[in-house]
Image 1 (cartoon, rainbow over the protein chains, first blue to last red):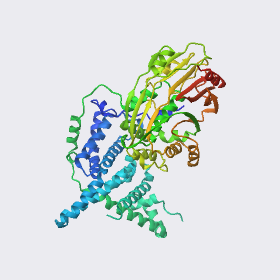
Image 2: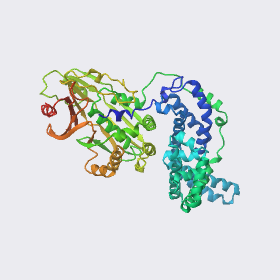
Image 3: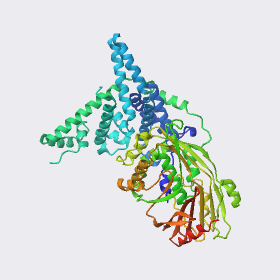
Image 4: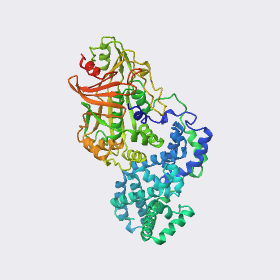
Length: 198
Length: 409
């Protein structure tokens, strides 16, 4: 009676323990080509998302490891790059979310440092304020629905509507509307959390 | 004059329209002050977002970003050596629970309910931090669903991929016993750990099969679940914030299947033969003398005591096709902590509440593959008594099911 429902919950064969020499879904050559063309772009987005170059590389590698080990369903095979983008960004958002739990502590420490730095050079204060601004934006991105955060980050990284539709598997005609909703959700949350701080 | 859809207007502001579309939009804007205002608002919002996210530009570039060939070499060097395949958590779950061994409606319904529970129900941020309450099935209740909309939306690859990925990432299987052979009633009872009952109305020799126990736990990622709902086109459904970081545990005790007559053998040698198929495997016709009788202690699901089960059940029912009003009204009639809800799909010709074995049960008349060879009718009778879920499947007149159930020792 419910076999169909249950089968939809069958998992992908995604586990680091199953790692073998050859990629599960692509030829070795296709995997290498995809890595070389996509890895820098993923790292750039993740670096922007996390503010940590080393962690960005780790997460991009983790996404490629999942691709290496995963036997993709047919629908995903048709758009492997899209699968990779979404996987990497979901991993990044998970990481951002884990970090954001410490945000308030960091925020308090930073604020305290900011107050204490009034006698320091102007450059130091500007740096602290910029770090605070970045933390606020990342905190809100971590709280947003992942698909909104993905959309905003890719758009801010210069991706066209066509690329957004392809990587996030959106209807091309809906990208504009989705961007409006994502920005509205971001702004609402930002104002709720931080008021009018820029 | 029809105003420009805001998505198109936003694409115009973003310089993402084709030249012909740009001309059309600009012609309209010259004549429509409302759209001019809206375009200015969208432009301001875009600028504000650009400033916000622009603050993230200044992290230093990484080595691999500039030298992907080095990154690729490093990636390959860090790949673990090939090893013997091991079951992933999700695979274990599927093999143990769903791999075609006993693909009957009742078992599937219990499994689906359990799995959906584990997916949908929030639980503690950690078991140590919040009190848990245990869900234990004490009764059965039916709900009529048109699953066509549910079958449609989640059949897209992205939805499946998201669900699969989440299970692979989050489910940890702690117990996954294989089926155990049993030759007598006493053997089966000893292995299963509860008294096994048999229908006195059947005098032929039964075959016994003891299904192994299974247990797993998982952490529910609320944002990810919400994303999955969105991907399925259900942006109207909102999950509560308390889901974030929650975890849930499920224990499925050993159960006993008793078979009478010439039942199809492939039903119990499955071991995942159809696991890679994208379509459900059709269940073959059941011969007229075949009866399956299942008895299983209730699965136990641990969730936080402050969980609003009704709210989550409403969301789940809306997801599978109910209107908000229908879902709310139905949920008000159910104690979600003790009730196994059996969705009744259109393939069931009719169903009714019957008194069986001294309690209320649900008798479904099926018009599909559960019927005998050459026939088109069959039955499924499900009830719960003293913490044991019973289900009886057979062919022909459904009144035979009640008689058979009432003859249990």
